[in-house]
Every structure is written in structure tokens, then in C-alpha cells.
Image (cartoon, rainbow, N blue to C red; front, side):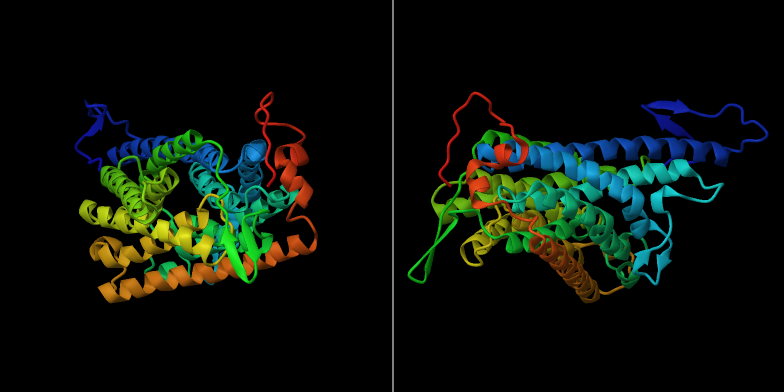
Length: 442
């Protein structure tokens, strides 16, 4: 931390030689603190915003070429529509004055009384809106290749404006879970699990892609529908990993917090361990190391460590990542081949299962002194588990209402003919790969 004795900028020692009578040393330090925080949080927000490109590339690469333009449009518009919704309503419900620890009640349209330091509000809103966009875009992958575009726009707005902010208020704005001692440093549950549970419900209401599950004589044959561009998916994962340093390290919320380095280290180790564990698991299970599982393993490690990245030691972060990497492979197989819920990119497994594991891992491996809840080890585990279940229940119920309404209104799923043609043409009248012959009978 910056002390009153000296300030270091890029290795250069700065000592205020003259302090004007109206400006004390404390005021000078506060100015520097605000400047560092402003730069750090806006830069971190930009890194998290870049993750939108990562999500777009992963989803595009792991699905078919005939839907690539549709996926790009969804990832563009879930941020664009979601940002406006979060400005108008979402921010207030999440960070407004708390009503009984359940929901915020002030700050709609970023409207605050005269005298409010709006630079602080704008800085914090900018950092938070990119997190809201992340929760919304996770849903896109699980519902890819068969969702109506207008239906997607509607549920993106509702998730960003209502579903994500309310549960976020419980945890990050002094709500009832926060009061109980629940700890989620950067959003394993607040962001990732919210998106994943909404995705699970959406995929259930939507139904599988044509030809995915073939039912004959009482048995179900599961058909793999391959993505069209694994290098593009890999590029997306590397972009996401890069952006995660803004996601996790940015959540220190201060450019002078020396724990930024600790957070970056645990983030890196968990991601690396997740990729290795998923590779090894797929190698042992399928006979060869699977690229898509390995890529999802890295993401699972990142999601898993996000809740405890500041309170979990580097060695334990490796264990968190290893377990997340194994879980993601098991969960993908379970959801696809047992539950028969079609999730083209494994979004529920990566963000939901790994997110729940990482949140509970805070209680298992976290430094209780850093967490500061005053709970015992068992108590902390219990509160973490309660938070996972509470957010799951909130998101499942509200998402079921949302997707049920969209389905009843006939704006959720495209027709069989439109799905077979591809959403690039049927929804947007264009092609992602003009001049190439792309044909599929599925």
C-alpha cells in the first residue's frame, strides 16, 4: 500500500516537496489513490470486456459454420442491450440502497443527488457492467444453433436487468448472504453460476438440436455434432484466460492493492491445472486427449478459482483447478448422455458445476482470517453451500418463468426448416463464410 512516507510510480520516488496550505499530505495521498484506482479499474473493465470476444470465438468454433454470424450477433447484442438495461435498472437493483438485504432500491438510470462523487459511480459502474454482460453471454453457448434472435434479445435484457443484479445484491452489496459471511471474491457464483443455471433452464425449455438425440425402441443414441473450427475455439479460450486477469485481479478494486500479484498467480495456476486435469481425464476415458475438453478444463479452472482467488494459497489453487478440470469432463458427459440436455459448448459444466465447486472450495481451502466472517471452517463451508443453493433456486425459478413465457409466446425456438438452413441465413439473411459451400443435413 502507498504510505505517507513515499509514493512510487514506475520505480521513481515522488515526495511532495511543498504541500499547499489547503492541501494536506492525506489529501494528496487520496488524490493519488483515486487516480491509481481509476486507471486500474477502467483497465480491468477493458480486459473483462475483451472476454466478450473470447466467448464469441469459443461458441463459434464449437458450433457449425452455418450459425457463425448469428453467434457473433448474439455476443454483440447481449452486451449492447445488457449495458443499457444495467444502466437503467440493473445497477440500482444490485448496488442501490438495500431494501431488507434483498434488493437495491436507488440509483436507477445512475441518478444520484447533487454532491455525489459521480466519478466513483461511473468508475464502479463501468467495472460492474462487464460482469453483467459475462453472466448474460454464458447463456448463449448452451442455447446455440436453435434460438430465435428476438427471444435471445429479450432474455439477455431480463438477465442483465433483474436476475443477475438481485442475487448479486445478496452477495456483493451487503445483502443477506453477505451478512451471513458468504465469500465470493470475483464471481464464481455471482457471475458464472448465474449464467450457467439460466443456461441450463433455457436449454431444457428449448430442447435439443435436430438429430442430437435419436430415440428408437425405447433407447436413446447420442450423436456428437462437431464444431467447425477448433483453432477459433482455442483462440477464444486464450482471450478469455487473458481477460480473466482483469476479472480476478481487477476485483481487488484498487490499483495500489499488493494482493493483485497473489490473485494473478492463483488464477494462472488453477487454469493450468484445470487444463491438465481435463486433458488427462479425457485421455483416460476416451483413449485420446480431447482438445475441446482440455480447453474447457482451462476455463473450468478459471471459474473454480474465481471465488477464492484472494483467500486461497497458490498450492491449494492448483488442487482447486485439478478438481474443476476433472469435474467439467464428468459433467459434460452427465448432462449430454444421461440427462440428454443439449449444451453445445459445455457452458453449464464449465460455469455452473465448476462455479459451485469453486465457491464451496472457499470454505475448504480459504484463509479464514482473510475471509473475515468469524465462522469456523465447517461454518464457512455451510454458508458457501447455502449461497450456492440459494442462487441456484433464484435463477432456476426466475429463468423458468422467463423461458416459459418466451416459449408460450412462440419466440424461443426457430422452426426445423430454419434450423436446418442455418441461423445465419434464416435469422440474418447473410453468411459468415461467403463463397464457401457449407452444407449440413442436420
